Amino acid sequence: MEEYHVPEDADLEQLRVAVQGCRGCELYKDTTQAVFGVGVAAARMLVVGEQPGDVEDRQGRPFVGPAGKVLDRAFDAAGLDRAGMYVTNAVKHFKHKPAAAGKRRIHQTPDRTEIVACRPWLLAEFARVRPSTVVVLGATAGKALLGPSFRVTREHGKALPWPDCAERPEEFAGAGVLVATIHPSAVLRADDREAAFAGMVEDLKVVSSATAPG
Ligand code: URA
Image 1 (cartoon, rainbow, N blue to C red):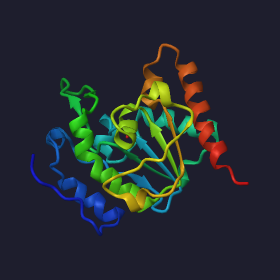
Image 2: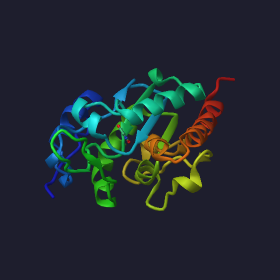
Image 3: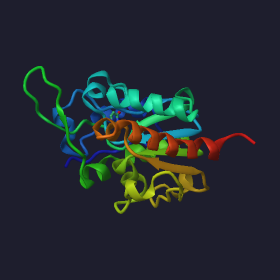
Image 4: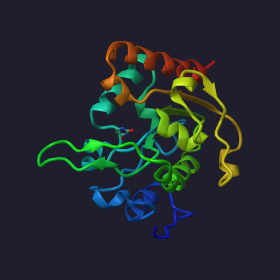
């Protein structure tokens, strides 16, 4: 793979431009654009998903498609306000199988190499936002922040250890609240969507109670 560098002194807006030139893995080749995080630069809460989907790839913003609608409903139900968050993905390009003309492209889960190749962008976002709370949506986001042994089925709905990051020890020093839940797409795929959604909301309530003032 080609060499690439995440610019050290760049702010989030400059990173958003720079990521368009990333050639750290092959995923850029068949996408519209890299989809960088959006939200409040000084957000207390960082939300990390897997990768952009078909709609996000076209629009250039995370969680604006069907999974995003589920996520918005779940945040509402858990009493969390998306307006105060910075929302991003572990992997910035859409990994997919080609689809027939006019059909939606089929999502593919990013592999370890792609997660690792994209991690410097995620760490750069983390370092700029310096959140006190992190919400991990699904296994890929968990593996990107907490390591390859992360399992969302085992770890969801509880306060997990703050990620320690050998590459950027200073920015990751200290502690905050990190909670994982299932990915909103898993709600859409579940046989019992209502139960899956309710489970996701329960997990997110752990975040709201851990971060409630007072
Ligand atoms: N799924 C994700 O993980 N992120 C998005 O932005 C959209 C769907």
